[in-house]
Image 1 (tube, rainbow, N blue to C red):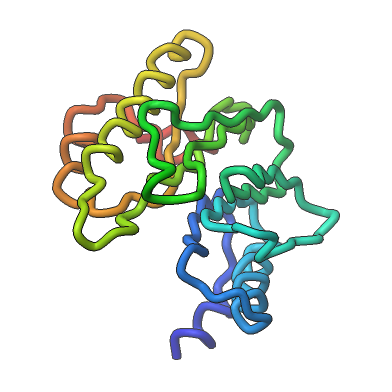
Image 2 (tube, rainbow, N blue to C red):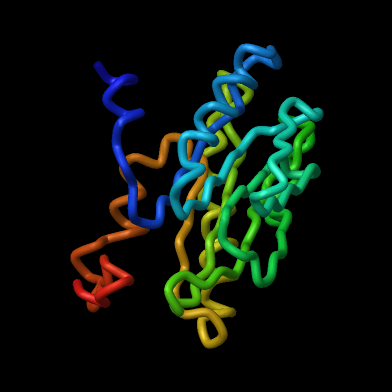
Length: 194
């Protein structure tokens, strides 16, 4: 019922989706699953943020959508909205090359949806690669680097939406984003209602 039901739904809103491709093997089967997932949202306004596309493991070739791919970070954003501006940042807070050969950081794109400008961040934090070591401290430093970046740009950009891979951050997410302390959240951009 789940697959058949999801195909029959008509969407009218902006969909912001994140997809972690890190632990998928580089098979045609997995690429087809991801392509089908992306194509499911063809008839909607969408922003799809994908992490873990390493070593040319996935290529998306739909000329109707805008793409922003940072090969160095393995991050991809696909959207049918116009990308006004884009940039990426590599975390420089620690040297983790002894644990992991990949670089980590985030992408930032500027978009406008129903005359509302906002920024989307596609983020990947370093995972625990060595079972005996917890890299939680490094991840906390990476989060602080992202928050500092946002705070330094708060005058230019008013709405920030962060998507990505948050490894073992279950307890810390409540401190990072405490929705009860945020005022004036607009949940419907068409009517500007809360």
